[in-house]
Structures are given as C-alpha cells and as structure tokens.
Amino acid sequence: MVTKKITANRALLATAMAASLVLGAAGCAREGGAEAGKDSGVVHVVCGATEDWCAATTKKFTESTGVKADFVRLSSGEALARIKAGKGNAEFDVWYGGPADGYASAGEEGLLEPYVSPNAGVIPAKYKDPQGTWTGVYVGALGFCSNNKLLAERGLQVPDSWTDLLDPKLAKDVGIAHPSTSGTSYTALWTQVQLAGGDETKALDYMRKLHPNVLQYTKSGSAPAQMTARGEVAVGIIFAHDCVATVEAGFPDLRVSFPTEGTGYETGGVALVKNAKNPTSGRKFVDWALTTEAQEVGPSVKAYQFPTNPQAKVSSKVLPLSGIKMVEYDAVAAGKAKSALNKRFDAEVAQAPKS
Image (cartoon, rainbow, N blue to C red; front, side):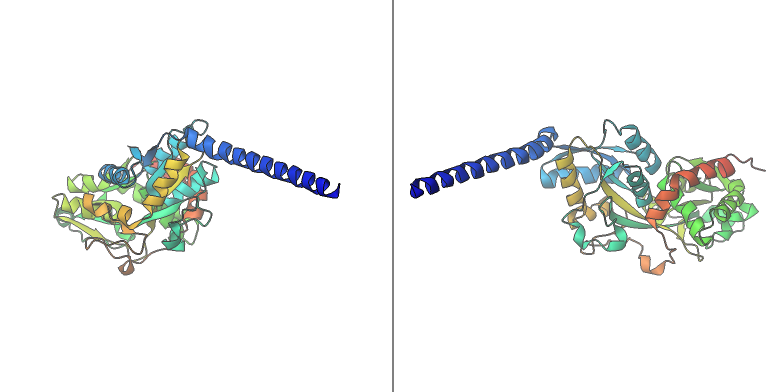
C-alpha cells in the first residue's frame, strides 16, 4: 500500500514538472516568438552620418550578417523629431551616427530602448551610456574650416580662438548650422556653455556677438564645409573630419584649426528605437556597429572620425585627439539641456536683426 502511494506521488510530481516545463516553454515561446514573429529580418536605420557612410555601413552590415538594411539620412535634430513623431508607430529600428547628446535627449523622453551589447565591453566607458541607452561608435572634434585665400584677401590669419570669429572683418563670412537641426551646431553651443563655466546666458551672449558674422544658419552641420570650399564664407564651424574630407574632394586651400580656449567633441552613437518593429535585427546592427569591421568602414568613404573600438585600425588621415584641447563634454547633461537651450537660441540669437 505504501509502495503504491509513493508511486502515485511520483507520478503526480512528474506530471506537475512536465506541465511546468510546458508552461515555461510556452511562455518563452510567447516572448521570443512574439519578438521573432514581428521581426521581418530587416533593419530600418535613421542615419546621422554622411550619405556615403550610411550607404557603405548598411551595405557592409548586410554582407557580414545576411540581414537586410536600409537607411534614411537625417541630421541629428531631424532624426530626433522623426523618432518622436513615430513614438506610437516606430518608423525606424536603429539610430546610427550623430552626436550622443541627441541620443541622451531621446533617452530622457523614453524614445530609445536600453540595450547593452555583448560587444560594448571593449568601448571605453566615457564613450557609452552605462545603462545602454546609446553606445559610441566614433569620436570627432569640433574645429574651424577656413578658406585660406579668402582670409588672405581680408587680411586675416587662420583663426585659432573663438574670439577670432568675432572680428568685424568676418561680417556675414562665417558658416554654422542651426543647433535645433544640427548636432554639430549644438556641440558648438554646448561648448560655449562649458567655456562659460556652465552659464547658459553667457554662452548665448557669445552666440549673439557671433550672429552678425554668420551668413546663414544651415540645416546640416556639414554644409558649412561646402560653403567654405565654394567661397561663400571664409570660415565654417564644423567637425574637423568634415573639413579633411572636403580637402580630399579637391579643395586644397582649406585649413583646419582648433580654438586654443578648448573645443567640444561628438561621440557618434548607435541605439535601439523604442518599440522597434524589428528588434532582433536592430540588436544585430548595434552588435555589429561596435566591431572593428564596422568602425573601419568610415575611411573608405572619406569619413575620418576616430573609432571608439580600441582594436580598430586608425587611418593616417584621422586627426589625433591627443593634440587638441578639449572641454569637459558631458553628453548626458548636454542632452537634458538641449530642448530648452535650443529654444533660447532661436528666440535670443537666431531671430535677432543683423546690423
């Protein structure tokens, strides 16, 4: 009788364990299946790098992983606006390229899905968000791109300070983008905040003084390089690598310089978009973007940023960061201040009349 009871109990236990395993498997299947089921094996990328770099990167990703990829090239502010507009129905799976303060701002608004890639371990801590909201894939320093011939005509030297750009001889002769649409220009604005000891009003005072010398505020951060090359302005405020690429494109009179007071820099990011339609493929893209293979694509299309992966080969045309005086650039703080500071810039600087 005892033996029968033990046998029955064992049978009941086995049945319960089997049921538990089935339910657990079903739960996993529901979770994994739901994600796998809605992932179509393609990744839609909103890309803040140059058009050529976006194309080369997505192409190489597909060749390396077999996962299809497409992209829309947008400046940082435009990318943030599009991601925000698609909050209830995500248009993109991944955001790639463009300064990390834009990503930090998007993270504050709950627009990105935190993801710590297994490949993120090799990326230095200063180039990534510890919660995985974004991870850096390249670094570039802000500088001046000058047309040497035009400066000589005006009796000016290549500028090596922010103060040099305020010279009345440069009236309507400086090119810079609008910080609301351009991560490059927001880097310039936040650099002034850092140089002013965190005082946003003083930073805007500098931008107001610069305003009469600005020909126009472009939408794209790299556009002032082309304006300088064509002789529309004598100096452009851009990331130095964009000036180097323009020199390579056939404009040898351009010169790169950096302000002695200190300059800001961008950490170009990659991140998953919240509620992406293709989250599995999106994670694969993030994983791949942190590899040496991905970070060595840039120089093949004249994109000379510094890779964040220490094992990636660095092109001889990449300007070494060690020789440039940098400000302490906190992308998270910059991201939190971005919306309000851009509104102040628009109201207090961009709309001011020019004498």
